[in-house]
Image 1 (tube, rainbow, N blue to C red):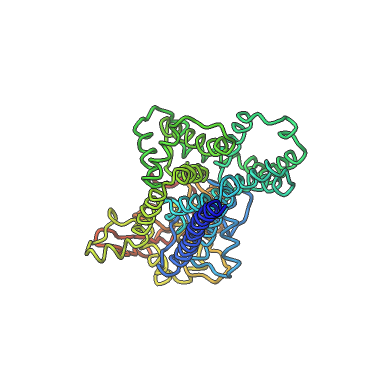
Image 2: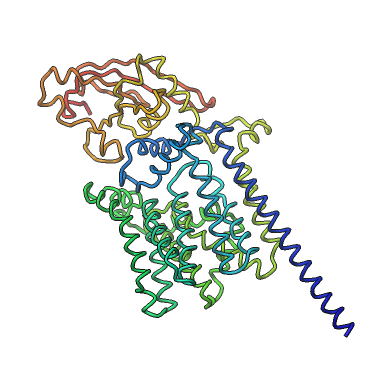
Length: 518
């Protein structure tokens, strides 16, 4: 009896030791997650990182709330509106605030979903793999459509798991809400539905569960959220879908093996070199038949496959498959924890963190190594120089914030709108110069210079058309306007090898595009 008691004590002691180790890992991972979140929140305000012009473009959208925009659904603009108005600030950190918050929330949802499928330890490793991926590290510094998309993708997985388990109203309604909002974030959310349909066919659940009242209500809720954007697109000749087709180059379908290789190579940067290599090994192994693995495969592999096909036929940007790594992070964590590959897990986290750290500290590393920054060796070069360049405009143009600004560049109009000093809450008057009449961005859609002004109108009306034209290069505007005067040529040196330039023309009396010289 004593030996049995001793054996039981040994077993309990071992279990207790294992539990202590697990709890220590949990505490360490939680501390790590919150520390990383704090770093990403504080990086923007302390680094002074200027907006990329796409971010300034989205900020312009947020000043004109709508159900749709030229190139994207509306959620990113709504988020910027929310964060800037919540804190009564139009600073860069306020514009970008939703991004680090949503990525952190996505990591939590991955933890919660994995804990539901497996256990807490696997959940924390899955969340850590996702949260340290180079894509999330990079994108946490900028506001893009990927942040709300990945959050909605993660939320949809979480709600589906609970709906399948408990069949509760809140889970089904949450699923409808997540998919609907995901569609308003980025149309890629449609692939989540494709994966869900594949999963349903694969698992062959009872028909009564597929068409249950709660599931139908979730579908109705999702449709109600999506409908206003579809209506907006219908009213605007489905311009957002046209743009999606254009950037995908679907009208130029060819066979491009090199593009496929480039896309695959990009995934090593998106998910992390070691993470993506191990993930490919997981995909090549014989598929298991348990429900959890079916779910994870259906919500990762189809999107990667679709984007790989897109890449070989035409073009696919490396971040287009990003939502696949929500489920992929869970798959990878489960495989490594199940095999007790904790050292490999830690190597993945350290390598991903190292890549992120190099990016965050790149200017300091360059300075430490005495490397002269250039446009080719500096990852931030695309955003540098524009802020001081546009903030210097009032020195050259009197009453600049009240003038009407004209350009054929969405980049310049976006930066001008954001960085030209103006009273809080007042929108700058910007107009798109659009000689060919093609709609190629939001300014063309709602702020284009009227084609008829000056052509059939009175000379008095034409003379009242007073603009400041903005360009990065000298332009020939005689014929377009009655009066053309070069007001200023502004230069801003970023590096010895990189200089920003602006040409400002005071133009009066629009004569019509037909009179413009080629």
